[in-house]
Image (tube, rainbow, N blue to C red):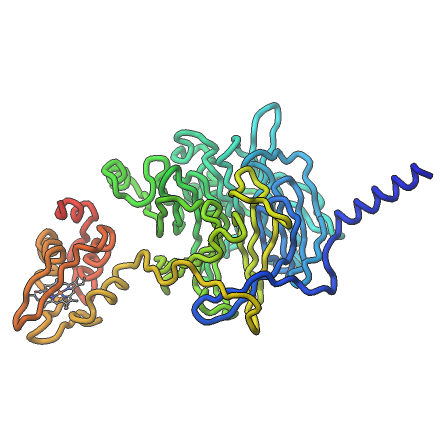
Length: 497
Ligand code: HEC
C-alpha cells in the first residue's frame, strides 16, 4: 500500500513537471511602462524557471525555451501553459556552460526541426555541440549531431538563428583560446554557417569552411532584421561591449581590437586587413545578452529597433536603428535593476515582447534570486494603467549617427540639405574647393570654425567625436557630385593634437 502510494506520487510529480500552467486563468500584471506614447503592461507568463537561456517564438505560434540545465519547454504565449518536450542528460552546466541556444525551422509545419546547442564533457574534455531534433507527439526525438567544436569552462557563445536564405548561423565563443578568434582553421570566436543537414554551403566565404565571419570574443545575441541584416551583441573584456553588423567574410578584430579603432595598434591592424568597427560599444560594460530585431506596429516607438537584454545593468535596452539599419541613433533603457538580470528577449507574431530573467545563474545581483525567479515576462499594449507608469531611464540620448544624419542635424540648417547653401551668406558645399581640397584644411575649419561676412559665422565643431567628424567629412566629400578622397579617423585625431 505504501509502495503504491509512493508510486502514484512520483507519477503525479512527473506529469506535473511535464505540463504546467494556468489554463483559463489570466496572467498577472506586475508593471506598466510607457515609451513616448504607447501604454504597456508587463505580465508574468511563466515563473519558477531555472535560467531560461534562449527564447524563440516559433512559426507554430508557441514560445520555445531552453533552460540552462538541459530542459526544453514549449509554452503557450497567451496562457503560459507549458510542456517539457526534452531533457538532455549529457548537458554539462557550470557558470555559463549548459544548454544554450535554440531555433526552429522557419517552416515548422512541414519541417518540424528544432536546433539546439549545448556544452558537454567527454573524456574530461569540453565540447560545444550543435544538434538537430524532430518534433513529434509533443517531444523532441531523433537527435542528430550537426557539428561539434572545442569548448571551455566559459566563452562558449552561443546563439543560433536561421538566415533568410535558410542556413543555420551559429555564433561561437573563443573558448578562452588566445588567438582562436583570428585563426581561420579554428571554429571558435566565429559566426559559422551551415545548411540544415550540417554541411558547408558552397557560397560560404571559403567553400571548405563553416566560417562566415571571425574575430569575436563571446557573442550573446544574434538576430536578423527584416532587411536581412545580421546583428550581434558581444561581451567585451573589462571594456568595450559591442553591437556589430555582420558582413560576410569580415573580421571583427578580437583579441587585437576592442570597440572602435581608436588605439594605434587597432588602426594598424584595421589598415592591414578587413577589420570592421562595431555599430556601438559600451565602456563601462553593460554585459549585453540576447537580442531581437523588433518591427511591429503594436509598439510603434520600438519599431526598427534592436531589443537587447543586459545582465550586469539588468535592463531591457531599445537600440533604435536608422532607416538603412547601418547605425544606432538612440538608446533607451527600461527596467534598470527591477527584475534582475535579463538573459534573452524575443517578440511574437502580434508584436508582444517576451523577456527572460537570469537570477538563478552563477552571478545574481544583490537581493536576487527573488521568489518566482526565474520568470518569463510578457510586454503588450495596455488599456489603462494600474501602477505608476515606468519610463525609460535615459530616453532620447543620441549615441551615434552616420554622416548623413550628422550633417542633417548640425550643418543643414545653414548649408541646406542638398549642400546648396544660401547665396551671399552660407557658402554652398556642393562643388566647394574647400570641401574637395586639402583634408587638413577642412578639418581645421571644422575644429575651429570661422567668422563669415555680415556677422554670420561657421561654428566650431570640436565637440564632435573623432568618428563623428570622420563620418560628416566623408559625407560632404562624397555627396552632391563631390568626389574627394575619404579621410581617416587617424588624420582627424592627429590634426586635433
Ligand atoms: C550657423 C550656420 C552654419 C552651420 C550650422 C555650419 N556652417 Fe559651415 N559655414 C558657415 C559660414 C557662414 C561659412 C562661411 C565662412 C567664411 O566666410 O569663410 C561656412 C563655411 C563652411 C565651409 C567652407 C565652404 C567654402 O566653400 O567656403 C565648409 C566646408 C563648411 N562650412 C562645412 C560645414 C559643416 C560640415 C557643418 C556641419 C558640421 C557646417 N559647416 C555647419 C555657416 C555654418
